[in-house]
Image (tube, rainbow, N blue to C red; front, side):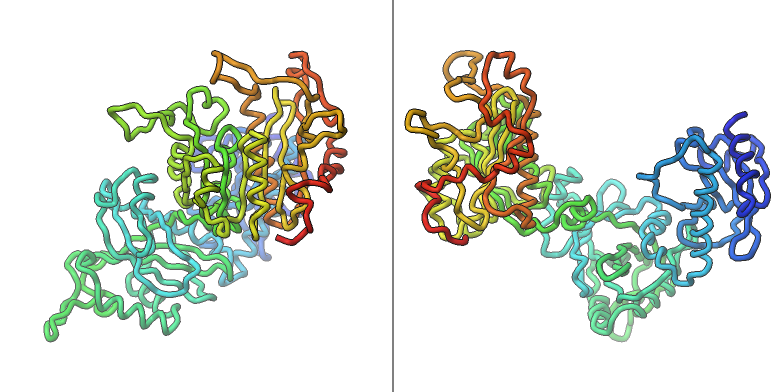
Length: 606
C-alpha cells in the first residue's frame, strides 16, 4: 500500500465527522499544483455550506505537511489564500509531525485550514490583511523595490530623498533628507551616490484605524481610488502639509512622483508600501497663472500607477526583526585590545546595534594572527597603499570591516597603548556606557583597573582572558554599580610563603606555557579560535545581562574546556579547575579582597 492509499484509507475510516467524500486526482492533472506527488479532492462543510478542497501530498510527505487548495475559487479574496488557491494555514518551523500516521497528519491540518477559511469569510475588515499587507503588496510590484532608511515613528508628512539605481530604474534607495547616503550606498549597492538619479519621495503616515484590502495581482488601484484613499485617511495637519508639497513639485519630478505610505497594523507596527505615479505628458498647466498643477490637484489625461515594495534597512527594525536588543542603539562601548577575543567582541557589539564602538590597540595585524582573529589575510595590508605595502593596525582594519558589514554603528579607532589614551585624555569617559578589556596582559589590565576606579562616575568594566591549551576562560565584571571586587583582587598570595598569582587560574602556579616559532618576538600562548570565541561570547552574554540588571555586583564567570591537550603536555591543574560548574558559580564573588588597595576603600555607588 503506497502513501496515497494509506492516507485516503485512514481519512475514509476516521475522518467522517469532517470529510464527506474523497476522490483521487489523476497523475496527469497534477501540474497545476505545487511540487506534489499525489492529490485528491475532499468534500467538506464550511459555515454550513458545501466546499471542495484539493489535498496535495508533497514528494517527501509525511515528513513535510500536506498542501491544501481552493482550486475552484469558492472563497474569493481573503487572507492566507493565494492566487492559485493555495491555503497558507500554519507556520511549521517548530511543528512536530507524527510520520507514522499520514492520514492523521492530513486531518489535523484540515482542521486548521477550515479555521482559516471560516475566519476569512466572517471577518469583513480582517486584521490578517494588515498583518500580511506587505506580502500581498509585493506580489503586484513586478520587481519594483525600494530600500529604505526612514523614521517610521514620525507621524508627519514630509519629503524624502529617492535615488534611482542606474541599471534598471525600478530599484530605489529612499532615506530621510538629513541622512548622508554616500557611505551606505557604496557599501551595500557598490555605487557612488553621484551615479544615481535623485528625486523626491513623499512619506505619508496613514491614521491609526485605516483599513484597506491589498490589491489583487493584475488588478491594481486606479489613480482616483488611490488619491481618495490617501486624502481620506490622513489627519488635517498632514493633509495641509501634503497640499503644500504638491504646490512645489521639483523639476526632477516633472513626470513622476513617488509616495511611501505607512499603514498602521497596530500601535507598534506599520506596513510600508510605495506607489510611483507617472504622467508622461507632464502636469496640467493653469494657463491663467502659468503654474503646473500636481495630479492630486488636477489629474492629467494620461497617468499610470506602479506599486513598489519596501525593504527596510533601518537598524532598529533589523534588530527587532532578528530578535536583537534595540536597547543598545544609543549606547557607546570601548574595547581595549582587539586580538582574538576583542575582535570578536567588537564585531558582536556592532551586531548588537551599539551606536559607537571605540577600539584601542597599538598592534599591527600580522599573518600569524589570522586563524584566531575576526579579520582574515585580506586585511593585513592597507588596500589604499597600492604602491607601498603598508601593514594595517588592528583597530583600523577592524573599523573598516565593521563599517563595511554594519554601517549603522560608528567606529572610532585609536591605534595607541591604553596608558597613552589615559595620559592624553583621548576619551571622554562620561560618554562611555561599557568598557571591555581583552588585553591578556595582567599588568596592563591592572593599570586599567586603577584608572577606572579613580573616575567619579565609571562605567562597568568587563575583563576577559583565555587559559592555555583551551582548558578554560574567564569573564570578570567590575564597577557594576559598586566598587567592591575588582581585577586587582584576583592577584595576591594566599600565604606569606607564596608569590602573587591569579586566584582564578585553572593552572597550577609556577608553570610556563608560552611557545616560540622563531625566537624572540614570536612568543605566544597556545589556544584555538574556539577558545577565544567561546570567551568572547561569554563577554557579550554578560554584557546583555548587566544591561538588563540580571547580574548584581562584580562576579567572575569561568568556563572549563577539554583537559586532554593540557595534560598531554605534562602540565598540572590548580584546585580551582577541579570545582564543578555549580561551585564555580556559587564562588563567583569569593575572590573579593577586603584589603584590596584599589577597591577596598569606603564602598560607594557609581
